Amino acid sequence: MAQDQSIVFDRRQAGVNQLGGVFVNGRPLPEYVRRRIVELALLGVRPCDISRRLLVSHGCVSKILTRFYETGSIRPGSIGGSKTKVSIINLANARIN
DNA sequence: CACGTTACGGTTGAG
DNA sequence: GACTCAACCGTAACG
Image (cartoon, rainbow, N blue to C red):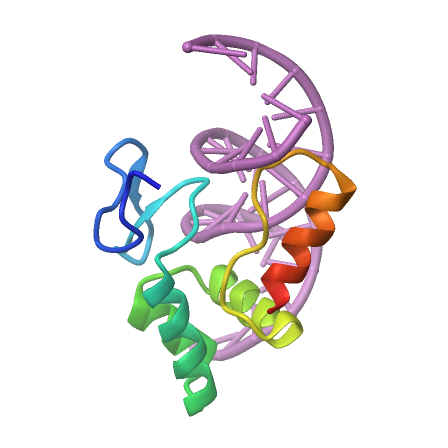
């Protein structure tokens, strides 16, 4: 909320992975990065090339791609929140849409 | 070398 | 206002 969804990376746990990309543990990638992963994949780029191009681990690329094929959306799942059934169903529904 | 899944540590967010 | 709890996050490692 307070932080913008783009550019402004968290300075708290910000670190560099083996690929040289900046990431934040426990925090999802920026929307534009996720979007790029899906777009490149659809263009026919190999997951391994995408991971190197976007500087994200291949495991993450594979995971995001799998989620995209399953849900049809690049957005992450519903993190946090209590296990209130109603909330889960509500969020899950919003996620798919 | 390319790919999927698991294991790990960490953050999130409603109640 | 602060704590709890389960789910999801992405990287690193394994096969």
